[in-house]
Image (cartoon, rainbow, N blue to C red; front, side, top):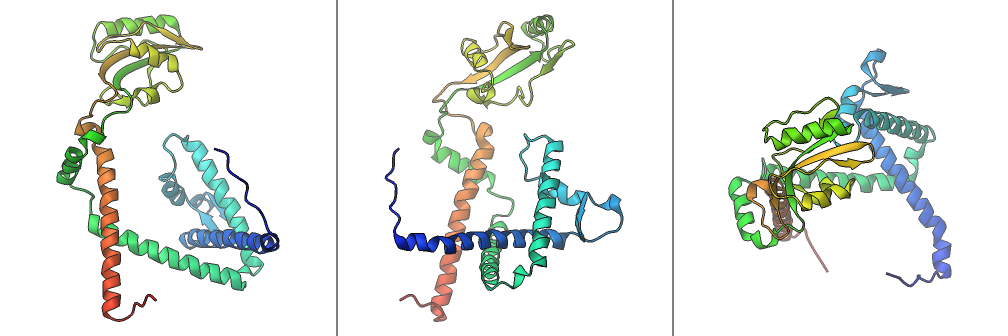
Amino acid sequence: MNRALPTIDDDTVAARPRVCRQIRLTMLVALLVSMSVAVSACTPDPEPSTYVARVGDALLTQADINSLLQDRSAMLDSADAVSQIVEQWVTNELLYQEAVDRGLRGDPEVQRLLADNERSVLIDALVTRFLDDELGDGPDEAAIQTYYEQHRDKLALREPFVRIRHLVYGNADSARAGLAALEASLLTPVIPSGGRLASPVRDDVFYPQGQLFAATPGLSQVVDRLDVGDVNPVFAVDSTFHVVQLLDRLDTGSVPTLDMIKDEIRGRVAIETRKQLYARQVQRLRTRALAREELVVN
């Protein structure tokens, strides 16, 4: 969609240096706050074996890395993730220590932004702790079942979901042997030398068909032509050979069972509950402040 470009007047142009300075200061404050947390978590230790990286007296330990890895994508190679964490930590620590050495903590504008950031951190901490205390272990089974029943008409699948058994081989002979094993209806198919189960596909889980074969769309077309229980002929993709058995299918428009989408429903219920709890807590604080004549809105 084309949008008209905004006009820029003289006042806007004159304000740009102030805006740029504000942005730089905001970025600096974020860096100071984030690195302050990291430094406080690291205890100087003279033994190199107890840390992965050191900048001055600040240490990055394996425990720190393990904690940060929990927030990284499971699809990212673990060695690459560790390397990225170490490099990012070293870079940030170098910048943080340089900012401190230059006395930027004492800059009035930095102090103001630090105070603003402290308010935000405290508010987020209060809301998070309150909601966690109220929710406990999350929505119970009854709430999940109720949501499912009330929203069945909105839960229809927008694309086909399938359960499959997918074998990948490095040569055609092994692929044909795998095909024969599947056609023999073995519960645990034989995987001849050179073959492997396609990861992370599990044959007891439904997956969106498009997601499964995003990298090899030709396979999706092959599966479209299969009936439940059928096995496709060996399908070559570049230097690999694929064999797929269709175990079950849910067509577009079908309503999935609760077991299929329970985790997603649990997440939706948790979000709705958090919103309701947040609104009630804010209203309670407002009512209390009004009763104490501590809140005035003109």
